[in-house]
Image (cartoon, rainbow, N blue to C red; front, side):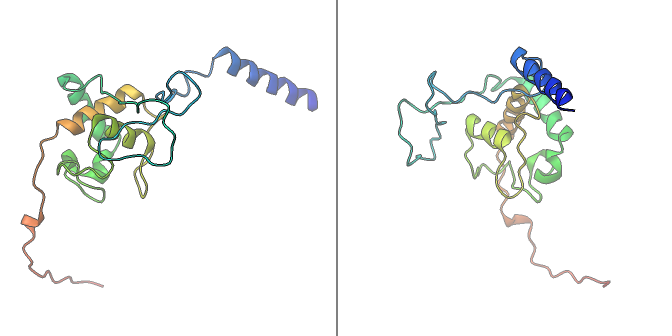
Length: 167
């Protein structure tokens, strides 16, 4: 029994060392400056307190920003990955926030939108990093940032009381 466990452990270790499992999980984007120190992502809306900064914060740039094919693929991915179920058709909002109103709780820059999709957010937004490719996250980011900003105030609220029947 022990020899079987040893053989399995050795095979797994060899597989990890040889890189044969690299295709299973994609590495997250690098946030380092080449050394061992943490490199924080720059957000123009936020100032990060409490971390010593050895260099400038990393600015994530979308390599697909403005690419019409990437935007169209991002639109298809938005439906395919069921983003529409929470964020509504074309990001208009449902049980999750609207992505059309120009108000981004965690920042609307390309890097901030990428991070929101990659890392997920508290109270419902799942982490997609490692589940889908970084290129697909950038395509989703391109699509979301290309959505027209729409004033989604309560203009449709009529104030009419609706009587509910049933139980």
